[in-house]
Length: 158
Image (cartoon, rainbow, N blue to C red; front, top):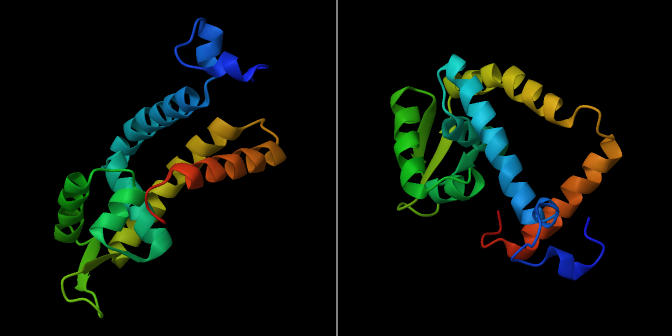
């Protein structure tokens, strides 16, 4: 890391300063992960944004389109379109919220859960490759630090 906090200030004067800038590293890591994973997911007939949506639904069980948009880091219009495709293909279902008739909640069907399980070996292999030979304690600290940073800048409580 930069020894002097001023060394991490934008604009950068050297490639080394850029390489030490956390937002740059996070963006670059996220992009490389997405490109690799999207290419690999094609073999399963699924795109990355769809995998993120079914992954969020798998973890949270039921979400609104707005909540999916936040958690899947995907624009709401794209989420709406992909949820419609998931419903049409039988992988997801929409239900009217019990407390607010205007709200539709989305959940996975058995077919959607099966597709999510099909993606697991690929996603897990990519994650294992990315984290191989990194001390698990360091990974735990990395996750804790990133969660603390996200908490400071997030807009939604999700």
